[in-house]
Amino acid sequence: MLSVQLILLSVIILGLSGLPNCLFSSRSMAGQRTASGLMLLGSATGLVGIAVSFRQAGLPALSIPWFLPWGQFAVSVDAVSIVFLVPVFIVPALGSIYGLRYWKQSEHPENGRPLIFFYGLLAGSMALVIIAHDAVLFLIAWEIMAVAAFFAATAENDNPDVCRAGWVYLIATHVGTL
Image (tube, rainbow, N blue to C red; front, side):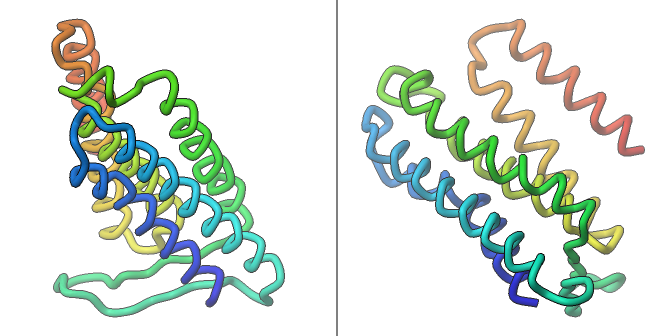
């Protein structure tokens, strides 16, 4: 149970990592550094949760009722989900570090905030997709992931090719979902 709680905490930290960036000036690197630090914290928490799951007997799971009239909030961690969670925790953290030099918010004040916010939301929702053990929760996480990926990919919205590619992605992911 502790491993699932740590991984859920990681999902929350990753998903909200870009939020504090909104408190800083759009030309300040402090917000981007804070978001990157939270991304590293969230990823480390998730990796610790994975390590703890190896020491637990049985399938670590959490299932609680929620506000929707059907299904429940059910998540679980098994060997297959661990295989996919490891890169989901490592790659976005490394990407946020890389972004500190490659896509400096101070050089892109018009689209730095949305990119950082949706990048964190994308990482958190990808992890939730992997551990979702309920069809409704899976679809909710999938939609959050798809929309976050769209907005992260189209952050450079002054380029028509980027916008066109973003719409192709969004349509393809929804057609695939159907």
